[in-house]
Image (tube, rainbow over all chains, first blue to last red; front, side, top):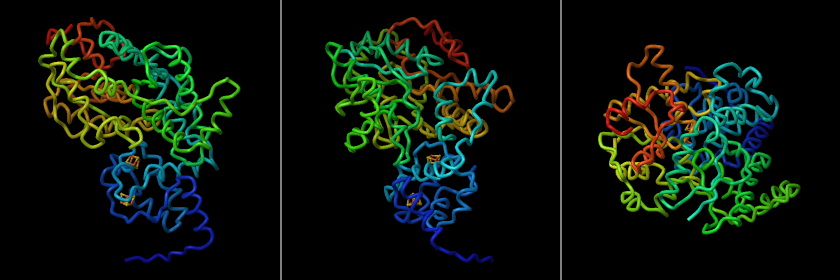
Length: 137
Length: 296
Ligand code: SF4
Ligand code: SF4
């Protein structure tokens, strides 16, 4: 069994309120029922499940959240949002983590590298959607 | 009746048949889609960041342009109609947002001023499926059917954006029926299946194809297992992912059989007696199925 000290100091609180500002959601409304994770089609590909992301956010654990793959695996399908029993816009919280990162590091996908046959055939909405989610441009 | 129709980008590129069949069908049903003379991309995905006004400008610009268009049309109402479900969801969400938040609407209208545009906040956004259900009515469609789609076993794939979020849903988000009822109206068989709104992976096809392939495998195998011989959709991105990635999975030897993907309007066109000739948007060839059922 391992233990971890949890510190909620100034830095943690600032992170929490930034995420709440961007998402417009109250992180503490979440009571960790796990319904969001249960309904997410991509849970099996996430390193932190959706409710775990929210839990880490509640604790202000910035490093853990910012290094997680999960927000980038999320496809913004919004199933979690329509199902949350606490009426939290869960997908907006996932988006706020992406946004937080993109505001410092604006290109998560190198647009110029999407080339070749495949890029030619891709639907516009795939490209626009991907660039909107993976860049701050 | 005429509607101000916003095509979005994809209906002009790799979903041309979706647009063509929808427009033809709309004439027969006297619920005609008339294209807006000027339009721009809606941005595909709505921003969920509460503080990002910039990404809400494009959808409002479309709404304001549609209002101009509505003034020119005779026999219309305050509706802008879409076919792409991503456009539908994005426009609906932003429309509701600016209706609720006057300050945001004002800010966006300032941005539109230089184009002499202004959105009043009085338009409604509807997906064409809603028009078919609520304004044309399925009884009317049944009356216009010339060729029953006997032998077609159709799995309706809603994907996410027709049903999510609440501001944008066109039907009950957990048990929708609009596409199934339409299927019955056309004389085809409805396949009951659990993957009707399992996300296809969406824009991840650009850089995380594995994620998409996983989903496509689940969805298409799920449809075949329940006896479907066709999947219908309303979204050019769902259609592309379902269609192109099946071919990919088949080449890799992961699946043997493929299942053709149609836009709901293509099936309507066949049933209403419009001759379908162009299948170039398809990756899985739908002709063998349609020929075997005597539908083309
Ligand atoms: S469904 Fe809502 S309340 Fe339940 S864990 Fe997820 S975010 Fe929290
Ligand atoms: S919006 Fe993202 S986190 Fe929520 S269910 Fe869909 S993929 Fe999962």
